[in-house]
Length: 152
Picture 1 (cartoon, rainbow, N blue to C red):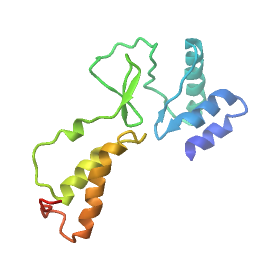
Picture 2: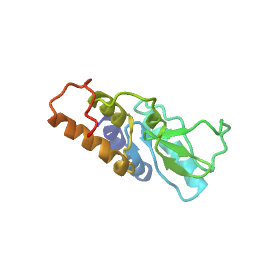
Picture 3: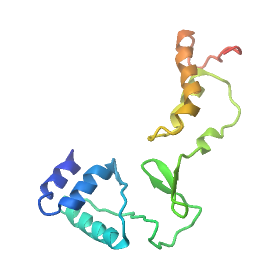
């Protein structure tokens, strides 16, 4: 609401970047595309100027054409997902699925399912069965730390 308020105040003077910021912002990320590199630098400067009036400090810019020296094994986080800048791919962090053996309890299943952040819904087919297990476990009326039956 605060971001939209400040963007709205600048719409008359900067309609294109304000419109782009409004359409492309999610929490504290702005994910957008520009057709040519010159447009990128103009968008960056105008966006910084617009939001500096509200004391927002825009930083952490990334683009496939920007040559910023960074460790290639260091992932770029965008809207809770990971971005491989070299290949221009966005993917989900599946390291959370690598867990040691544990008792199959409702609490453990719930914990693992909720570690998977999937704002685009691409992992829905993979998370459907565990979520269904959670739903069915409520009907058993057992505690969260009780091991689920083998036939479950």
